[in-house]
Image 1 (tube, rainbow, N blue to C red):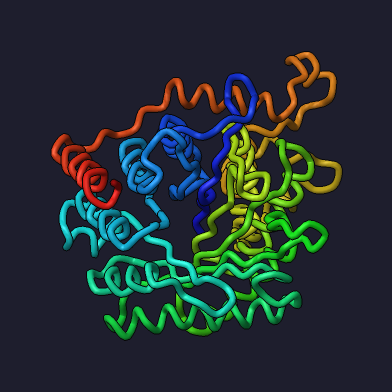
Image 2 (image 1 turned 45 degrees about the horizontal axis):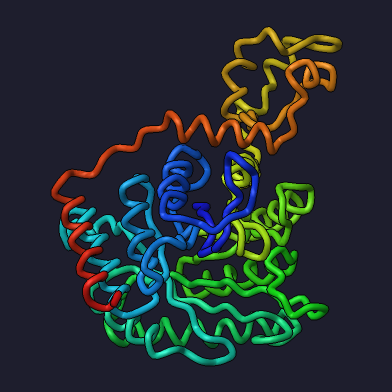
Length: 389
């Protein structure tokens, strides 16, 4: 299972002031560098829509910023056929050529249906073009129960299957065995307001069902799980995010996006929330590992040696098995109240902000070769001068 961040929020909680503001390209660069250092966030996806760039080609700027600030795999949407092909060319440049890209794709491009039961021409054209060159495609659907999809969850799943299979079938007709992932971003509309209920517990159930169906077709999945409607990093955010992420992961999701950083129905992202969610995803990953049952872990000889009223703390066996068996949080506090108070009594948001600041101040990302940077820059410039006008 691989976890990644969210789609395209437009607002960010400023790391220094805590105020909400529009996202910038600098945020995109900083977010990419931040997740490069976070162990349980495995790929880059959108993260912020910069307000200070050409509005016609934001994905080109975002992906260029990502390639220059993280070595992790990239996922992106594309607003046009031209952009989709330029994103592919950027991936080829970073990989070192088309052959190298096919062996290790540096980008996966996301194409979604328009629920209910429609595919837009731009996305259909992009699916065909990307399939033809062998670029991996996420083909998915995003019905919202009660508005663009049926209210019952079973109906949600059915319409998602129909829309997704239509796109996947098209890709396979263009090029048999074209690399695709089964995407799902389906959730609910809160019928009291009509708003997207990104933190709905049912989102986890819908994605779990889609994972099971995709596995029947033997297609890898690109799921959604880890979102929240909360406006700050509070208990609501923790409950909604962890329930979704754990549900989808236990159902066998392969790529789980929107798993970190997102708040306020995907409109807002937060530096500290990425750090908190990384800790939560580490716990989810530990749950997925389960309980290893071997002669070593059953510990029969150690139990026999220690006997009644003994203590296992001094055994070498204990030392050898702590890290393989126990998840040790680096952010969450397990000390007593008095110890916590003596250390400053900081809540989790403050601790996460400090960690985010430290990462951004110290973390260095391996630089791309100069010729690759030049090629990426040329692609950006061409986009600005052609379809970006």
